[in-house]
Length: 168
Length: 249
Image (cartoon, rainbow over all chains, first blue to last red; front, side, top):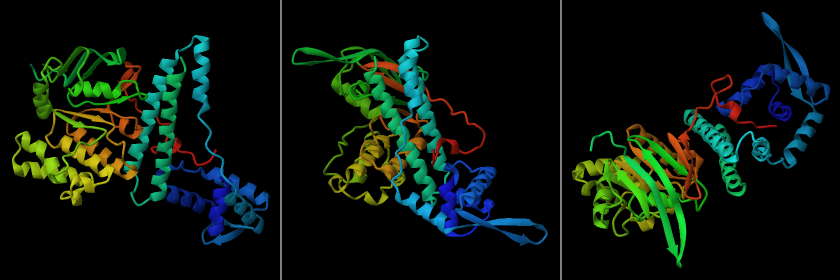
């Protein structure tokens, strides 16, 4: 959450609620809607680290609102984040643990585990497909995010197939 | 036979290839029933017998033993020519390779099965316009197959298979040559015809396509390892699938 907020603030100063709205607008329904409390907690930490500062802006008939802006140190941290390579996703190892260990305990057999997991992945895929159908075709960011999730799921299914072939 | 008969019923279906005198079992005792209007996806690793199974169901490969019933009629005992008639009347088939007629236009390729099936020229043309339109190929109607990309030919093959409103659509990896956007067109059309009651049996490794199905059959070593409905995802709270996607760890 830290770097996306810094990136939005590098574009223009904003208060917490505007940041939440910006994330929702840009990433669409595929993105887990950020919790406003979590945004304020993160902004507080960024401020403590010297990456952002805030000013109170007076509003007529309302409590003051806090507008955040990025500092030189914040810009530098953001630059570092943008330029460093990003870690690849980790393999879904929880299912693999079950697959390897559960048969040793006699609690389940591998065929049943693989079959249940395959059906679950396909259910997730259907969910993503329906989400893509409901998404505004003009929102390329949201659609690409969904497509990325679909490609990951496809890889998980292919791997499941390999597990079924290779593990007795 | 009554209208209640399943569209497909395979009983203890076996296929053994004889290669160089060594018997190689490809399908080893498959029982499969597909009711009218059902969409069944067949998945499994390569060499698990998926293509052999679907080819046998379409009469393109003979069975070694077992029974195949299509729409209440015993089919595995038919002669090759009787199979050909049954196929023309009841089955639309999409192959991995497209088998379009090279010296006919795209439009004629798609209209031909409808005309052979007894549709009027106008009905055949309207059906062709609908199918090619849905697949984003309306402006390719007068092209010849050789002028099309692999992905375009594959979509034309799907349109042709659906031209005759077949009782059964059999498809072997129908999105194997398509990019994401073209796959989306194919998925949309499959969804539409399925909602209109089209029975579909499809071999695919593409999970997007398989997730359209009512039921998934998984093959392993020529046998059915799993056969069942795709469950509904139980959402934790909210109405979006947001918790399926995570941008950061």
